[in-house]
Amino acid sequence: MLYKILKPLLFRLDAERAHNLVSGLLRATSATPLLSVLRAIYSYDDPILATECAGLRMANPIGLAAGFDKRAALIGPMAALGFGHVEVGTVTARPQPGNPRPRLFRLPEDGALINRLGFNSPGMVAVARRLRDQRPTANDRLTTNRTATSLVVGPSSLVVGVNIGKNRTTPLERAAEDYLAAFVALAAQADYVTVNISSPNTPGLRLLHERAALEQLLGELAALNRRLGRPRPIFLKISPDETPAQIEEVVQAGCAAAIAGFVATNTTLSREGLHSPLAAETGGLSGRPLRERSLGTIAQLRRLTDGRVPIIGVGGVASAEDAYAHIRSGASLVQLYTGLIYEGPDLIYRIKRGLADLLRRDGFRSIAEAVGTIRS
Figure 1 (cartoon, rainbow, N blue to C red):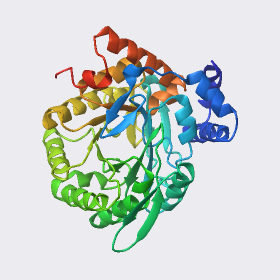
Figure 2 (tube, rainbow, N blue to C red):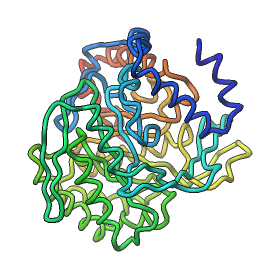
Figure 3 (cartoon, helix red, strand yellow):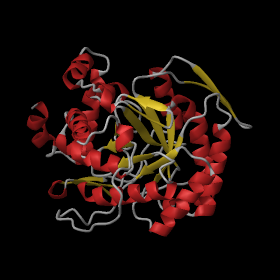
């Protein structure tokens, strides 16, 4: 009810300003009794939703997609809202401001957002410090020839992933240096790491989908990962705009490097079927128009991997039915961002309740049983 009152006021603000305002309010609850109030309001647990992905156990399969919390500042509030996991980032090796404003646009007629944020990031050191402060329960050491870093990771009811990308000013031929540096700084803080090669807002980044470059990058990351006391699952986030043949190449490269899984998908450059007057804005499109592209990519990944590699589904999730479609197409976990903007914080609660009902309606006893049960 509160969000229904606030939403018209927030939507009068520039989209990024509104996001920063809401993030600030959520962040402010972290050190107050309001966090417990949020948890009490949005709490919903059902054993049928408990699941496991890449060895990580979660209370439910619903996660916050990368892009919402780039600074690792909202982990506590997101746990209180009922997410099963949160993906922080995208985080770059060095701080960078991103693209000039305005760079985030609402398309209410389409239930969508367009962003050209451009990996605005405080950098890996700041995010690592914030994660370390919030999860200070165990030590894990990662050593390379150039650096030795003792970082902290601890068990949590909320699984926390970190999404890493390259700096805009780094030449593409040196992109691996940024990913490796960010991995060294952040992997030991996280439960899993996602390699973002698919944002449309960093020039040339999607060229890393090419097999030779991707195999080299993933191979070097895998070698670093083996030096962790507890290697982290590595996921690869892919574009929805690749051809089936290109996606097959990406899958072959990922499987050759023994990555843990794929995140499908990032935002799209397509503007097909949009009605908003802002449709011509440059940047990546997310939300309802991405749903079918995401489902198609998930289904293709499921076929190409014979279901052996887990998939995190992202794109157009704004209801329990949307989340269920992602899962039955082949996703073990589901993430959302744009749906939260339009539907408000009780969306997670509604998705979880609805998803539990849908599973029982169709005779499934768990999330895992429903994964990939729709064949395209």
